[in-house]
Amino acid sequence: MRRTILAAALLAFLPASVAWAEMPDEAKSMFEAKSVADRNTALSTLEAAAAKDPASAYAAGAGEFFTALELLAGGLHRHGFESPRSFMLPLMRLPVPDNPHPQPLTYEEFRAILVAFRNRLEKSAVTLGSVPKDADIGMIVDLTHVGIDLNEDGKLAPDESITAIMASLSRGSVEPSDAAPSLTFRFDRADGFWLQGYAEFLMAQADFWLAHDFRNAFDGSFHMLFPRAKLPLQDTLVPLDGGMSGNMFASEWRFADFISLVHLVNWPVVEPERRQAARRHLLEMIRLSREDWKSILAETDNDREWLPGPQQKGVNPLTGLEVGEEQVQAWLATLTVAEDLLEGRALLPHFRITGKGINMKRFFDEPKPFDLVLSITGPGIAPYLESGKILTSDDFDQIQREFGGAGFLTFALWFN
Image (cartoon, rainbow, N blue to C red):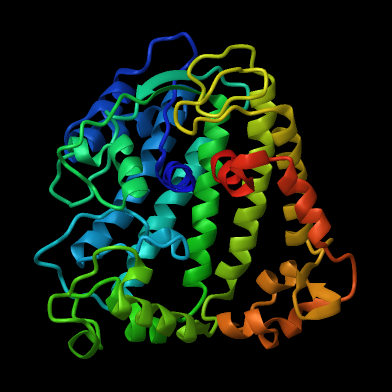
């Protein structure tokens, strides 16, 4: 279940049009295109019309979001990326097909891939943000018809559809022979806030990486992700067959390299403004989530909802869950807690420190070298400790209980 929600969270890219009005022809063409060239032509037309037409802006923002994912997937495929299928590396979960002839990869080229991905996400967020809050949006889209080019062949094949990609993230592999079931939703204005929020969330992740010099981690462990891309330790540490099938923790050599990665996350800050920007992206995500739920709770219809409110009864076909008033109120409370942490009004507890907590605003705005292990054990976060209101386990437990058996993480990845 959690893998399915994470797949949706990372890979859903959503549409637009004026409710009950005809979907723009260009939007139809974009969402049903069978080639990258046709898709990009339609997207360019929508972008040109975006300033005067909210429906075109909404569709263009959605197209820009999924082409951001395509930029990331294409860059990874080009260099023979093999997914670790680990929740610990969320940006690295795209089910990129095998590339028998990968190009060599350098640290600078990997940073460039992240920059291109992040900048296209920003373009999407700006475009979606230009849609008026009260725009009457409604578009019916079958996600089996919407896809991204995972292998850079210029085609949008059935096994590259959103539905197939979500299924592959649940299974762990793409099966071209699979007949993906229809998964149709009617996306409305609320879903635009949702998608924009996810663009901000992914930008925060990318900016955090780019804020630091992680060359040592790249040189010392990234051959587990790119086993044939001529990284410095490939000849020494990668098995001759280059095999990386299965979960990261099912392979001894991959697990060893993951330990190396954890050890090598001792990253100097090289672009402090990006770490500061990461906090702003997260705050904007929180704002957009509030806008999303304000819009959802005002809806009076119940038509193939991507994210339904408590008043829109029925099990969601993607998650198999219904949303109740308890979950919505708990989620809004969670947003307040997260905002308080990011603004420094509340402090994050550390398991071995009493009387003081971590000021997360200062963690982002006063960046120092990031050492993962020392942050976990304590010394790495010592500069950010201070007295004040510290969140307790009871605060977290109270929120957790409201989400019931499906669990907080499942709802959080869906709710954004």
